[in-house]
Length: 169
Ligand code: S3P
Image (cartoon, rainbow, N blue to C red; front, side, top):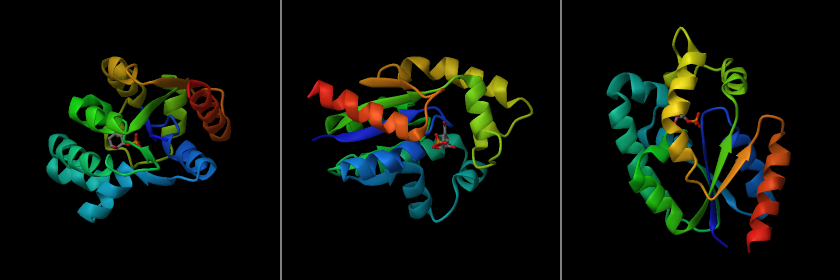
């Protein structure tokens, strides 16, 4: 069986769904942001602050290239990983791309209590979410499977992914 690659905007539940999904499938969960922080020995926020987003994207691509050769994993990616074709080409070789979506209001609610997302630390995060989402939508839409998580728990989303994969096999 191929890897499951979770993509989607910040706050769509990739990490929470990834945990349940990996347990259900007997796969390991690999979180790209966690691997970046481990390798760089610092936080995503610090990388954005000290080095800027373009350098973060280069680090992200290098890690994705490395992780995409793993087998039997659920790979949870950061919300901007879809933006580079090289990332998606690498992940697609051995993975099914599953994109989680949510409405901007739900994303705001799910992300507002946490300061770990440098791109949303602005005076008007809802406007920023809308801007980023509009730009990124075509990249998210290129997934093999798209699931709207607005009214679903992480467990329901994980079960829906398993159902959809089973029916495609
Ligand atoms: C980002 C999403 C974050 C993290 C970084 C940039 C983005 O990951 O990679 O802050 O560009 O959408 P999550 O989607 O896991 O929050």
